[in-house]
Each structure stands twice: as C-alpha cells, then as structure tokens.
Length: 262
Ligand code: PGA
Image: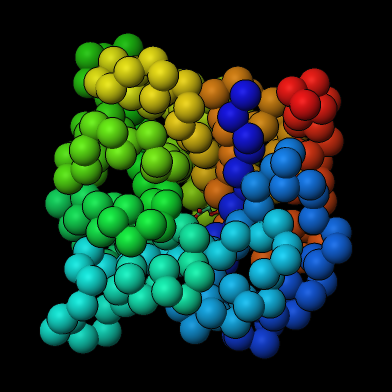
C-alpha cells in the first residue's frame, strides 16, 4: 500500500507570520504520520521558519520551486543545496503556473528534478494537460511525453524517488468541480506509462497525486480512487481548519489499511 501524501500549495499567499500561525493552529491536530504524510508548499521566505516550527509535526516543508544548479551567477534563483541545508524535504518542479507564467519548459524542469535529487530533496513533478491535449484513446497521451522529457535527466534507478502530480489545466484554480473519474484516469494512465517505460515495481511504488480544485467536500471521493495516492491542494488549503478537515478525512479512509499492515 502506498502511503497517501496530502500537500498544500499556498502559491504566493501568506506572510511569514501567517505561515507560522497556521503551523501553530494545526499543531497537535495532524494525523498519524504512519497513516498519511502531510506537507505544505510555501514561498521561499517562509520555508526556514516553517522547518523550525514544524520540526516535531507530521508536516513536511515543500519549496514551490528551485533552480537546476547548485550555485553560481543566477541572480534571483534559489539553489536546491541551500534548501536542503535549511531542512526543506520536497520541491515542486514544473507547476503549470510556472510553465505558463514563467515559461518553464521540459528541459529546464528536467534539470531542476535532477539537481533536487542530487541534494537529497524529493521532487514533486507536476504534469499537466489541457482538454484538447488529452487523448484517452489515442496512442500518445500528451502528459506521458511531458513526463518522459522531464525524467530524461535522471537515471532509471532514481525514478522511484520522485513523486508525480497530475494537474489537468481545466481543473487548477477554478475552485468548483474536480472530476474524480478523470482524475483517476489521468493517474492510472501515468502509472501505466511508468510501468511500460520503467517497471511494474517502480509503477507500484511511486506516489501519483492529483491536483485541481480539491476541497473538503470532494477529497474523500478523489482519495477513494485506486491510482490516486494523494492530492495537491491550492485554494482550499489556505485555511487551517479546512486543511485539518481534509488530512483527517484522508486519515480516516486509510487508517484501517494502515492498521492491518502492522
Ligand atoms: P487549486 O490549485 O486547488 O486551487 O485548484 C491546485 C494547484 O495549483 O496545485
């Protein structure tokens, strides 16, 4: 059984103080780390204080971005090595907003993924597609090609160490309906492509998340799907009580299986 990963993506919201107040509000109310992994992707300024504040909590700290080099003349960029030294455990690579607003392409994202892994940070590789690019019955699914390009800089052996997130562009940031059936189909097809390209063992082990308009009302439906191992939550994760409701609902879903595994 793959342990679910519930990640908040705060995007460019909250001050450092707001972030620390959130950590305080969820402290003591997060689910058992043996059942669910929880994480928060915050902006760079908040990362180090959050690592300090969340040290003893089931709350991993996630960077929303990092550069594909360790140091050098890259004004304004942040090195994955500096993030690792600050205790950051995960980094999102290639979120759709970075691709569309900041023109990140597969080649750049591939470098970021490789550099993060070299520093011991787990990349959360974001994949996306529009409705038109999606061809469930066609031979080439847009998202596969994107994913394979992004995995091109890492070795066969390293693939099992990444987390993948499937975030179709029609569902991100719209705030109303996430379609659990389409979400599951996207994640299932990504897993199948990993099995075909790498191995069944890797495909079985790798965590594939879904992102796009997840909220307290739909999270159980989405997390009830077999190939969805977690979610990346934007807007609905900004409120501490909402976040707690969601992680604890997922914990309730997974607790019996975790107990049986003991
Ligand atoms: P949303 O954002 O939940 O607000 O749709 C998801 C994301 O951008 O990761």
